[in-house]
Image (cartoon, one colour):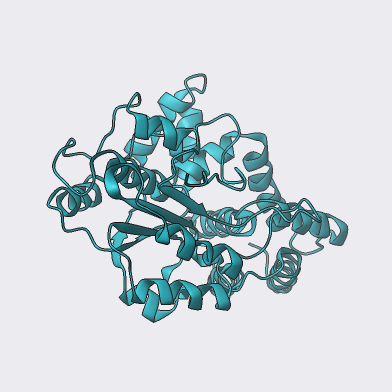
Length: 349
């Protein structure tokens, strides 16, 4: 009997909201969904899809939708043309319960020694693919593996994955999720078909927030949509204490740019280290907050903004590099604070 595979942790669940494996609605991605459905229902899907886009816009939701359909109907037109699977279907129930023998989820695990989330997706995790794809096919004749996210792989893990992509087994689907596909090996990207998800427009985001946050008023939802940068996940994170705290941390760092609080910065770095994608999310909040202030000053005709625009570019590059290389958050926070301080002392924003 095949061993059941379960996710090693739920670090990507936003407290109080459904996990992507339990989510059936895919918002604002109709074109990508239609393209995916045509390939699956025509019986000619690729052996690997690279699902890209910013955090929180539905990459995992799409991956689970593909997985449910394949495990329920195979690569055929036996199911609905929007790839939906009824919640009471056996495959859907098993996926939601993390008990389907034909589905494997690979992601950063919790270090049993420290109790903290590991900083990389290790080669040992990727090597599980060989055994998994070597098993007898599960129900529906398909096996599906989701790598969430491929950005987290170290070099050894990436090379191990490349070997799997070079010789894909039959009736096997590999779904790679990536926030920053440019950091992946070109040979990995070239062996996958790409599904690029777009940021949600404000109207779609506000409509979704009305369903998820019915207690919030219209103004609150509009503010969340504006700050979230087209990401439902970021908006929901902002609505929680943790996300709201990160947004405040970002504003506080800019407000205190001239004389940053070293102890507060070290505490912030430790908090980001414990969070899944914490540094990336904080970087998004920080750069968006700084960009808003620059736009506001420019609107009022302020001079001397060139230094701040240059700083914004350096910050975006710095946080992108830190996420790509899995750098320790404290160092990134400290170096950003130093750059902010130098810029603030040369001219207030």
